[in-house]
Length: 147
Image (cartoon, rainbow, N blue to C red; front, side, top):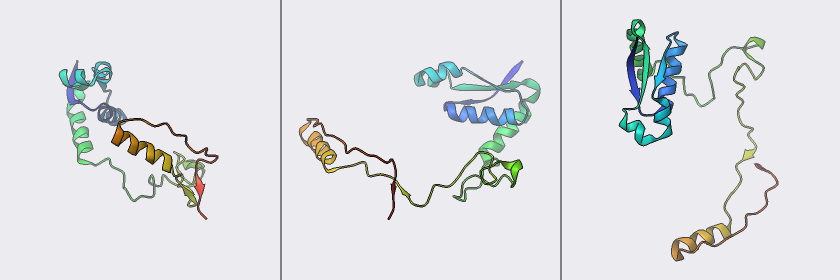
């Protein structure tokens, strides 16, 4: 038999908790996930998605979920990306990180997506209620280099 150890209204939070329990070796499952994802009003009506585990592992699962809520599994946020997973070929080819994370090149800047005609069209729509068509400038590059 299975015991419900938690209920979630957020599907992403439910999947994270499920993944954490499975990483700890607990065979867990999410019930009502199809109904909850299909329509958010049903998710609220049925009480969310239920995270269920075998009866024998319910206490261990509750301890893991309490530790997850307390932030014991959080990564350090130093702004430099994922923590170092080691070095050398055993950790991957992307600078010692198996996920392949690399910082963005320093010379790249996000492109300017607004133009005078787009601002004029927005003002005309807000003031007059009339949508005015405008053309965007053709962009050859997705990123611009700083000089």
